[in-house]
Length: 283
Image (cartoon, rainbow, N blue to C red; front, side, top):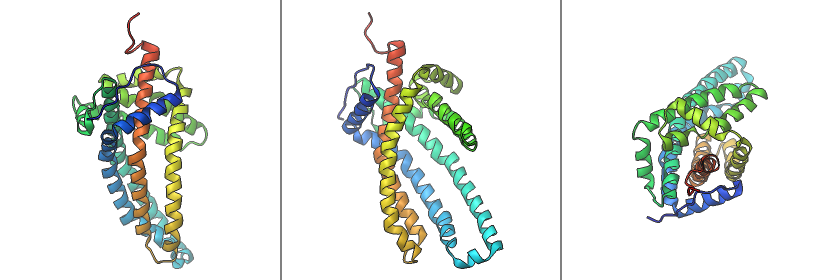
């Protein structure tokens, strides 16, 4: 396998992104395989739910008879709220756990790259499924997602608190995967490690996610402008539109998300180099 040896040294935000892109290019099959193994099943399940449940309901909303019948509209709204709750359950039960394990596998692959090795996607997942790492990571991931979801319901203060929490302990997956710590120890470890570097982490996150979201939104707008008029005119069902948009979104995620996971893990190592002298020659 083609490997790309990384050197442990302090890096700026732009340098981290550049190194992440270079590593991704050299080990494309490994990192895209890691992301695809988690994102494709999640995408299939969420797409099926959208096509079977959400799509027909969205199409029903454009029925003129529904707009004229208040009782029918209220019934539709109640069912729609239930369907939305079902999507939330699907997210907490499948999407979040798969994403957490994926991030841990990605962190291991980056760690191996520093040693000049390429474990492959299978080896990266094997690492996460050994010693119960996946259970520890999922437990913290679900708790963090739940707290962030509740906080996001509170305007302004809650939003700020959710962002702060995500920045402060969001790298817990790297700690669980690479230092083999339990949930509480991992949270304490990353809380202290990130201290003093929140703005750098925020800048890295905004830059990388801005690129990913920009590409995703752009492709989504093109798909929407192409397909929505056909759906509104009745020539194409909303289920087909939903399916097409989900497929486009999934492809973008598989292609783009590895850069984010790689960059975050490199940031974790950057913190250890700066604060602990990790991997540096003894004076």
